[in-house]
Length: 179
Figure (cartoon, rainbow, N blue to C red):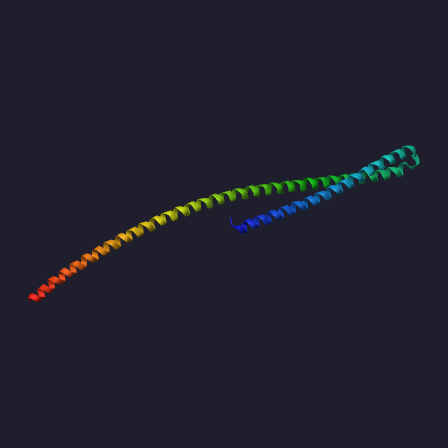
């Protein structure tokens, strides 16, 4: 794997970490919002209870107070619905974070496996290179020996040819003198 692709993977890993941080911040904001809504809900429940006590003691205000209670109950339902939605959003964001973490772990493990494979391949290639160099050195040595033998043989042949040439020259000289 090239340095450039490793850098790309590291950059992608940093982006994923930034996304996780951003999602964690959103999760914290949502949690704070839920807590505020829970406090508000508790406050509304407390107000409802006080209104119910007042209704028991003040019959004259029964109808108007019933409407207020119905409105508050509706608001509570709306707020509970909002809280439920926010909790679902928090669950979804947590599942996204867990998925990102799992992806990061898988990517990290995959990168480690690939680096080990590359390292093993590199070691094998170095061994092959060393074997090739040894074979080439051996072949060069054999070629040098062969060359030396050929040079010796050629020297012997040249000497032999010179001797033969001298003999033939002597024969030619003898033949030319006798004629």
